[in-house]
Length: 202
Image (cartoon, rainbow, N blue to C red; front, top):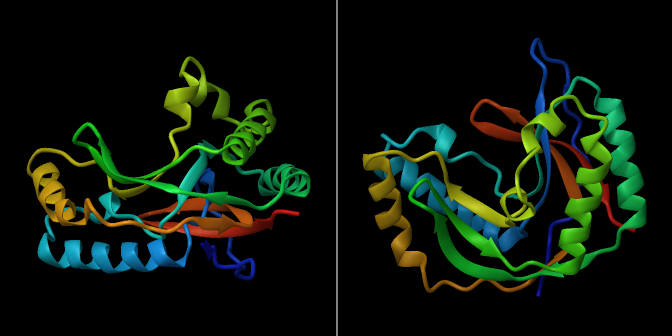
């Protein structure tokens, strides 16, 4: 079993002329981080017609869908309270799959701890973060939370087939379980995801 990298909380500039879009996620560990970086670089070099927005880095498992807010301190306070009530846990991966033809991903087996972390964050943010209720209302729990590591997303037409062929050689690849000791607040920034804050589980 591999333990997800424990890194210092990065210092980032949270100021923006537009309302930032953020989400919570967990790192899938160093094995998948390296795999993702190498394969995405290879895919971009081989098929430059696939846009960078389809191949955003770093690799992550989303546990709370994107929401828009200027109030970083409010989000930070809520996240800290959830981290203090949560404990490290282990995740296992279920293999490669796709959402139709638009997204290729590495599946994550559901766990009670992962489900609870996602649920608690969602409940506390739902009433307080501008935009979160409108974006999630009316969707089923299955739609809202399907844990996975996206490999390529927002694919259309020819890029769908290019990505499918590229990742087909990895179908039999196996990744060991990973120990999750924190969750992270990400900000969408062009074709990258910026880690704004890391919350260590007690």
